[in-house]
Length: 451
Image (cartoon, rainbow, N blue to C red; front, top):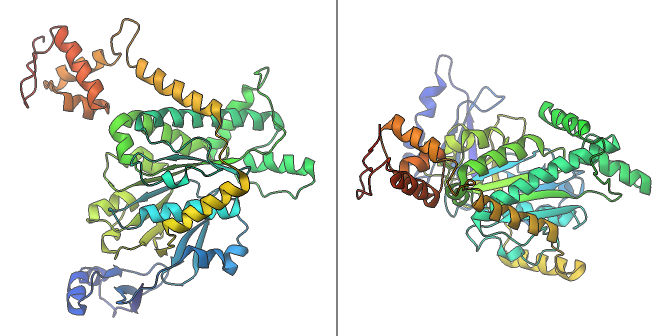
């Protein structure tokens, strides 16, 4: 993929002088892009990474067939690719990640990375061990998995139903904590180990809990007395929620999505629920501070600017990548950027794997109670936008904002309250009917009629 040259600066030479020479070095070498590490982490040298003229594809199958994969004793192993410096396979445990954010410009490898993550899990986990919730607002990316027996519900393509799906995950998380409290265990590995022990299977290693997860478990323990929760006698499957395009969801219900993602990311690891979020628009209105703060594992593909790179990784570097699966990976619990060449898996290979699993396990048995809960939640959310008397509960708050800003426009309400256009426009119509604001005035804000 690239060649790294390491140099040791002479005494007194500041590394900042070297890092500012990347464009000059790229021009003189006629290279597509040059990435400078000043300094190389853990070394007293400066690294200069030059892309190779001829690059070799890293195939997912080669890593799956490798010794590293066979020896990976992980609950949810996922293949990311090959470390571009050490040339060793990069295999991570999603159970310990425990949530991932993937971002980069269009066509740089995000969808292939998602496919590699999904296929890795399929090679290791049965439908009894793992269930997927897949969200595909673009409609075309994840439809190939529609016959996958691991699916909990059909691939969701309607952004308006996603907030309800995330709320179901939160409810499932709370339910699992109550079950754990009744069984005297801390997390899903402890629960499954207890079930396996009763069945005579070997014990699994438990994960340590964070303070937030301990608090959630304690809260659940207080609520288990006569709560009617039935403790099941079978293993609980892990649930992995894949969202392929966050930008489309944030346009529909930004506040609901942001709050739900943050809550799941903070507490759901111990319950065996994990998120993998991807976007091709790495801006702060899509990857908000609250979302980013709760997703410790970041994967950045090539982006157009250093600002986009900082939004994803909190530092520059992704703008100097060369594309075609070239990524910067921030492992959980680390601040070091690892450069990785992503593993490639083609659509035909994915289709063949899904077809094989469907033949072996049968067609997916969707959880009808989950589908109904999401449908009812989505319909209830739409009805919940209006109060008992048919008025949106945000009308009063919207009017307060308009009086404060002295600006009455739909776009301003969208930004301040993180609403979709339709709801913001309805609120503005209500304010007009009440006589608070004037009629539409083209592209200009409406006139404020009441002080």
